[in-house]
Image 1 (tube, chains in turn red, cyan):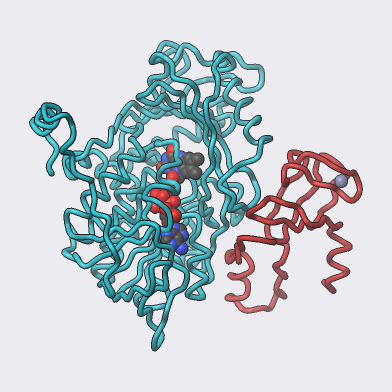
Image 2 (image 1 turned 90 degrees about the horizontal axis):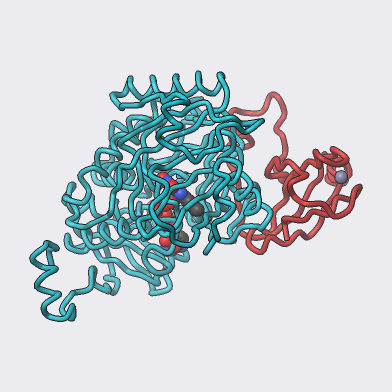
Length: 92
Length: 416
Ligand SMILES: Cc1cc2nc3c(=O)[nH]c(=O)nc-3n(C[C@H](O)[C@H](O)[C@H](O)COP(=O)(O)OP(=O)(O)OC[C@H]3O[C@@H](n4cnc5c(N)ncnc54)[C@H](O)[C@@H]3O)c2cc1C
Ligand SMILES: [Zn+2]
C-alpha cells in the first residue's frame, strides 16, 4: 500500500510525511543539450500503468530523498532506496 | 423519440412500457470517417457536434466499458467559468454558454442548476488574488462578485468564520456557475449523437493503432479491426496508454481523485462552496446527499480507488470549514483516474501524425468543459483548424514557452 512507505533510515511511515516529486527514471540533460532534450526532461512523462520509479522526500523524518519503486495500478511498493545510493548505483 | 410533457403523460398512461432505449446498441462497421476512442462526456460531445454542427455523420465512438463508466460518471458535477488566465477563461466561458442552452439543444434534462459557486478567502493576500481573478473574468465579460464577510454570514451562516488559522473573510462568487447531472450529460450527448447517425459501440476496447504510410488506417479492438479516415483520442485518464499505441510522447501523468457522498439530507447547502484554506469543495445533490472532494492522492495512479489517508484528510478539511459536517454519515466514496497535465490545463490539438487528433489533460476540471471540449474538438477534426477559443490549448505550448499554469505550480502535475 502506497499510503505506507518504509524509509530505509526511519522505518514504516505514513505517506503524509513525504513530499512526492515524481518520476525518478528521468536523467537530467547536460546544460548544453538540445531544446528538445530539455523539453522532454521537463514536460514529457512515460506514465506507465505498472512499475515506476519516483522521488519521495522524507520531509517530516530524515529529510533524505528516496527512490521508491511502486506499481501505479496496485499501489504496491516494491523497493525503497536512499536517493544518493540510487544515484551511485546507476552511475549518475 | 422527442421528450416533452406530452410524451411523459402518454407513456405514463401506457404503463411506462413503451419508452425506447436512448441509443442503439451499434455493432462496428468495417470503416468510419471518424473513430473516437472513449465514450466519456468529451468523446460523446465530440461525436454529437461532429454530426450536428459539422456534417460529419459516419462516426463511431468506441468505449471499453459501459457508457459513462469513466470520469464523466465519477465527478462532483461542478460547472463554472471563473478561471483567470487568458487562454482558459474564454474557453470555459464558451462552455458555460453552451451549458446554458444544452437542455434545449439536446432535448434532454441535464439538470443544470446555476446555484452559484463561491470560493472562500482567508487572508488579505488571498482576497487580493480573488479580486484579481474577478477582474480577469470581467475583462472577458464574465460577471464575478466579491462577497464580504458580513454579507457572506447572511448567505451561508453555517461556516466556521472564526477558525484560528483559516478564518473566513469573504468569497468570490460566480452566480451563473453551479452543477449539472453528470450521467445525464453523457446520456444526453449519446442520445443526441445516435439520433444524428453516430454508432456508439460499448464494451469495445482499443488495443492497438494501425498505421500505413505514416497515417492511421484504423484501430484493433476487442471487437476486431475498425478502419477510419481520422482517429480522435478522448480517453481521459488513459491517454498515455492509448497515445503509446501511436508512439506519442505526452506531457501527462495519471493521478486519482476521490469523491464522497453523504446520506440524503433536507436541503441545507444552497451553493457550491470551495474552501480556499485547502482544496475542499462541497455541494448538495438534488437527491439530498452532500457531494464533496478535495485534492488528488499525490502520486501517479491508475487504480480507480484512493487511499484512506487522503479520505481522512478530506474529512478534516470539510469539518474545518463546516463543523456540522462531523454529524453526517458518508454513504459512498470512489475515485477516478485523470490526466494531470504539466501546467494543469487541457490539450486539444492535432498530433505529429496527420490524421490523429488529441483531446486530453483535463485534470480534475474537465466536466465543466464537456460542451466546449466536444465543440472545439469536432471543429478541429472536421476543418483541420483550431477553434479560436482553443488556440491556447495546443500541444506545443510547452516547447514554445506558453504554458497555461493557473495554479502557478510549474511542471509538477501533482501540484495542480
Ligand atoms: C472524483 C472526481 C471529481 C471531479 N469533479 C469535477 C468537477 O466537479 N467539475 C469538473 O469540471 N470536472 C471534474 N472532474 C474532472 C472530469 O470528470 C474529467 O475531466 C472529465 O470527465 C474527463 O472527460 P471525459 O468525460 O471524456 O472522461 P471519461 O468519462 O473518463 O471518458 C474517457 C473514456 O475513455 C475510455 N477509454 C479509455 N481507454 C480506452 C480504450 N483503450 N478503448 C476504449 N475506450 C477507452 C474510458 O473507459 C472512459 O469511459 C472530476 C474528476 C474526478 C475523478
Ligand atoms: Zn526517513
